Amino acid sequence: MAYNKSDRGRRSFHEKGNGMHENDKKDFRSEQTANEENDSLVIGRNAVRELLRSGRSIDKILIRKGELEGSIIVLVAEARNKGIPVVEVEKAKLDSVSGFAPHQGIVAMAAEKEYSTVEDILQIAEERGEKPLIVVSDGITDPYNLGALIRCAEGVGAHGLILPKRRASGLTPLVTKASAGAVEHLAIAKVSNIVSTLESLKKKGLWVYSAEAGGQNYYDTDFSGGAVIVFGSEGDGVSKLVLERSDFIVSIPMYGKVNSFNVSTAASVILSEASRQHHKNV
Image 1 (cartoon, rainbow, N blue to C red):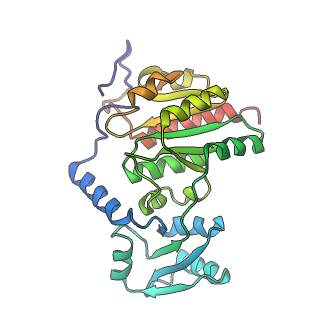
Image 2: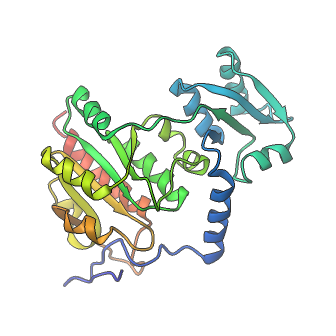
Image 3: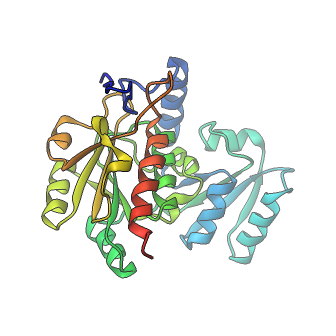
């Protein structure tokens, strides 16, 4: 997808590809393949800390032998206070279990996170007395990007995130780690058809915004009502069918030589503005 230039040389954040080196893509794919069969793994210190706070059932925690120092001491103490078994293992074991993802000396084996429904997300907004702010991932396949998007969504107070069931990353251990534990605090729904889900939300009075090239500046956009904000895949952006059903296309002006933002970086910019508008009278 080519970017568009305006009269002031502005460019949207999305273009074909995400600037990732081919070798990096291979590493991402190999790590995701190694982990995708065991979504119950939670990898890394931040992710395990948030897992312990979430109250989700944990079978056991593995730590690297001789790694009882720093923040791991606190995590181990909290786990033992909760009656969770803590097992010391060699580094090679942790490397193998984590699929060679950066584990920082700790991996938890937890009960699989339960997906919410779209109705659950709407109910969360109602219980908070807020207009819905929902994020949609339209085919994001990179687990690091999806994890960062989840972190952005939770950080700005979004009520939930919607994922497609097919042709996209699910909640793998790499996604959980990249979210820095935010996945434990955000309602996430997985749906069979993004387009029909958006149509249903529109009928409930929500507005659909797609972050894509050629749209209006995000800071000139009114997000103050019930909002569903869609972020597309790294290579192709928001799909054509989703764009056709969007009420607004929004873009981030670019003034430098770099012609696009990473999808999670773009999400942090747009979601922060949407959240500001939702909370300015709170």
